[in-house]
Every structure is written in C-alpha cells, then in structure tokens.
Amino acid sequence: MLMRTDPFREFDRVAQRLLGDAARPATMPMDAYREDDAFVIHFDLPGVHADSIDLEVERDVLTVSAERVSAVEGKEPLVAERPTGTFTRQLFLGDALDTDRVSASFADGVLTLRIPVAEQAKPRKITVTESPSTTAEITA
Image (cartoon, rainbow, N blue to C red; front, side, top):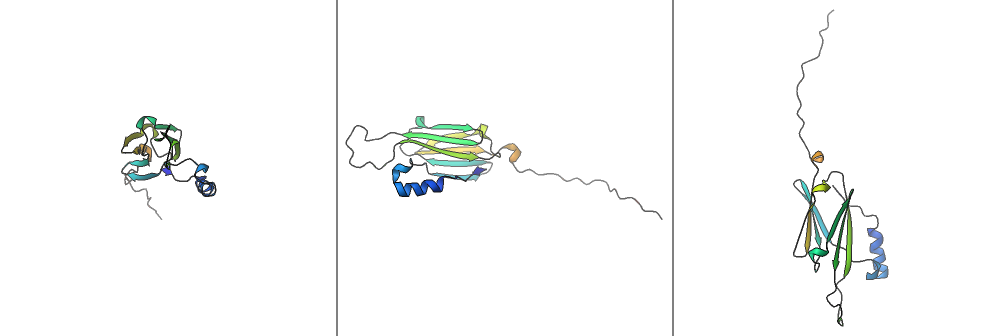
C-alpha cells in the first residue's frame, strides 16, 4: 500500500503562502490508485525530457527526480512563470508492494509507474476441511 502521510506537507503549504514561490521548489502533482494487483501512479511532468527523470527505490522509499530546463535561458524574459530546475518527490511504500518489479513509462508529459502488490500480500482463499468428530461417548 502507498503511505499517504507526508508530515511536512502542511508546513510547506503554510511556508509557501507566507514566503511566496521561493519557499519550496515546485512539486510534481500526482494521482495514485489501485488497479487489479498493482498500484498505478501518474506524475505530471510537462516540459521534462525522459532522460532527465531519475527513479530510485531504497528500502520502502521511492524517490522521483526530474529536471526542467528553462526555455528562456539566455534570452530576455517577458514572462517566466513556469518553474524550472530539479523537482523531487518521495513516496513511502508499504511492505505489501513488490519494489523489485516497478515499471515506468513516460508519454505526453506524464510519468506512469506501476508497482505490483507482493505475492505474500495478495488475498488468498483458505480451504477449510472437515475433521472426523472427536466427541467421546459418555458411559454411566
């Protein structure tokens, strides 16, 4: 299972409101959901080249990093609202996920990850067998 808690997220939101955009680098918006026996995660990364994306899994932490270069580099910008630089996002993965089989694809500015549920975490049926009766006869 994906762990949704980010203890610093609310702090970052307050700091961003107080200090403006410079308080926190831009984030990667994401959607995550379960589909059959896998979790699917979509990250919005418009303007990012696939070769600048770095994925790393260490223990139960998945780190996604990507870099967007400036389109106005070396030019006189009239408006420069799109964030540039390196973006990083970490997800805490539960033990129920198979981090050895993570797959990734990138199309139309969207990075899609599929993380399968580990075999030992999948629901399974347990068969109940009937044993012979063990009641003893009572004699008087």
